[in-house]
Image (cartoon, rainbow, N blue to C red):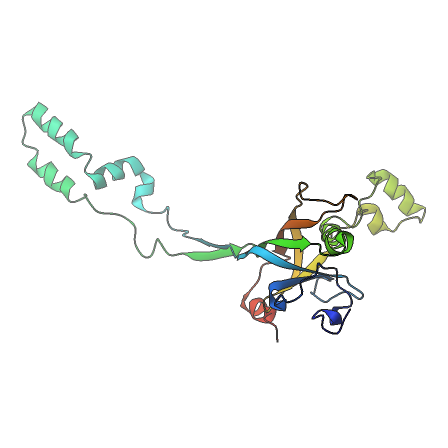
Amino acid sequence: MSAENPFASLNRPLSSRWDGLNTNLIAKFFEVDRQGKRLNEAVTVLAPLTECSLDVSLNWQSPFEGKSLESAAPTAFQMLQSGAFQPTVDAFAKLTGSSGDSATGVLQQFVGRTGITKLNSVQVFVGMQPVKIQATAIFRAWRDTFEEVERPSDQIMAWALPAELARDSSLLGNAVDAVKGKKSPIEALLPSKSPSLIAMTYKGRNYYPLVIENVTYPLGGPITKDGNLVELSLGLTLCSLAALDRNDWKAMRKK
């Protein structure tokens, strides 16, 4: 690559040409281990992102919310609180010839009241899900459709798919191979290999390790006479391997 190329130090990453685009607008993807350390000779994919968002779902609940008197007899208390009992009392008083004033006075005290208090509405933190990133990676070709679109998008698909799925899923057959020494006990019990873990660097933050939960690969884009895509908007759903805390978030900021 030429000396003017801002990505020359990245050992020839897989990317479309984005000359003149601010490098902070271009995401960098590469394979890492479970600690987030980049693997040796890891391939790098570069792509600008559109419609990119990070979703943090925090689970707060009110454990005492259903412990009020309303939960014991919900219909009766709702009628008391709304004043719905009043027509019934009036009808009964008319039927019996009594005034019903004393009952009316008592019922009026229930109207507009509630059993909810600050104590039984206290929220407690009960957990959270891993952080999710929704994004669309853009690839488009200026000179070489295979190098600028096909190869980088194929690499992302390779990371998303399992590294290897065993053809023979028979536990008995694998056990026999383990006894014969053809496979280790671990290979016999778990014969397939999971997808890769990756990292993403984007707009001043390093997100790692991530898994690719979903890929949307449009098949209707323009192509060359050889069948190679000219441009591709690859929809991605990335998810952190585990839930994050404030120290993890702080560590994601580039030094």
